[in-house]
Image 1 (cartoon, rainbow, N blue to C red):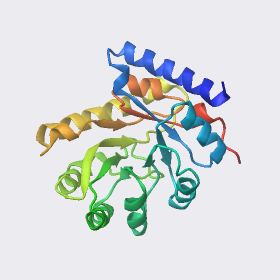
Image 2 (image 1 turned 90 degrees about the vertical axis):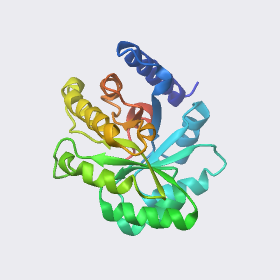
Image 3 (image 1 turned 30 degrees about the vertical axis):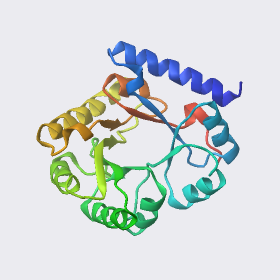
Length: 231
């Protein structure tokens, strides 16, 4: 067994226990392997061990990896800040985009998706910590963006994503995860297609168990799975 396979086994056991603590079905939580700067051979090992979702932060890096790993059956998700002028490439490459945070970007993604004959699954990124250094729509602007996106024919709005403040104690992050879940529940009450709003992308290597306890359906894990990133 490779070190990545061992890491994956440990992570899944922790995910299952977190699901059990919150009375959830473990099958309702998916693991996304964060592959930013991870070498190709380690990504391949992860997929061979059972990782089915891969998340990339940068368009150019992702394109090279997709070409080199085109023989693998995986779903590629974009999890970094997306510039509007990269919307065309993102619409061509990715199976899901987690970081939709403004209407201009939504319009560009929608336009290119329709040209491609696609309906692209997207999540709206919410800046739950009100941090100037991070992207994401602020909670007070979420409803307006949500109303625009849910009417776009080229996009399938599936839920929300957050990158809350990093705190040493994962339990101190809990209120931010809970807030994202509450925001999604509010949106469902007036959504045109409430059944499509099922995803909460939240939780990373140091706090994914708390995120699961608060309702995460996708946890984005990099370091705990692939090891420390090369500098």
